[in-house]
Image (tube, rainbow, N blue to C red; front, side, top):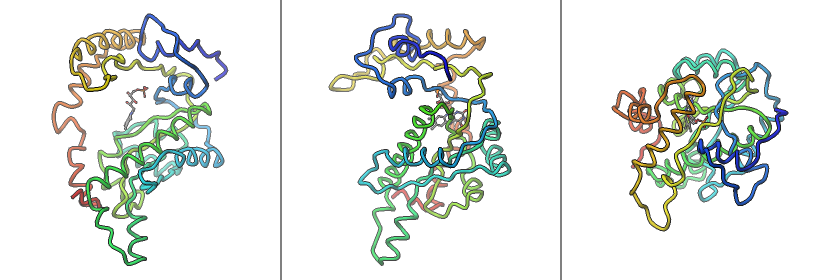
Length: 275
Ligand SMILES: Cc1cc2nc3c(=O)[nH]c(=O)nc-3n(C[C@H](O)[C@H](O)[C@H](O)COP(=O)(O)O)c2cc1C
């Protein structure tokens, strides 16, 4: 982690796989960390100190929260056997076993339900899709703050959406009560430098930035431009991959969601009525 940081224009260009760097309007260490994000899938066994875990959680709790309801919780899993069981449930992803901690970010309606029960007040609003949406969004914002905090300290991370492949078993493993649902896992650890994880280019800004109103024009051209860049990016790592093929395959059918097409019924069965 002692490498010299590349110039800001190179860092932004790298984010897009753009051969023509343009100087950004401003630069600082926060922007550097954000632009250098890459998911890490190989870890050294070094532990994460408790003090660092607490710092990640305070960074997570520093995220905005809708109406300050704070409808989320996080479960820190360090026990190697429990991590291995969760890895098996999440598509057998070995980085979950390798890294010292798996943070499971959960939408949490149970805390406010307990409060309402204790006060004897109604909480019907918690049964609506809107509130579940808020809880999922809160959990995601918190998790992403933890990602940025971890990366700013030189740790690596990777989200584990595959925890939703088998939500019932994950809930049983983590003793999640009704109203608490694992939104995503987050592996955190010291990156194994042997992996050489690279910054993955994103769609051109023209594809995602709309001025004043949404303009669908030109999307296929933007995608074609991106495909060229990302195919080159993968080829530099001796990989033959297409974003277009991967994206269309990932969303082609219910089966291609790896079991997650049952999310609605799993949520309603686990205390999220989604009215
Ligand atoms: C909600 C979410 C779930 C994800 N789940 C997984 C996962 O289960 N396994 C994995 O290896 N990567 C997972 N990822 C990482 C993405 O594959 C990765 O962010 C994407 O390919 C872009 O690469 P980058 O993070 O290196 O820029 C997930 C990312 C997000 C945001």
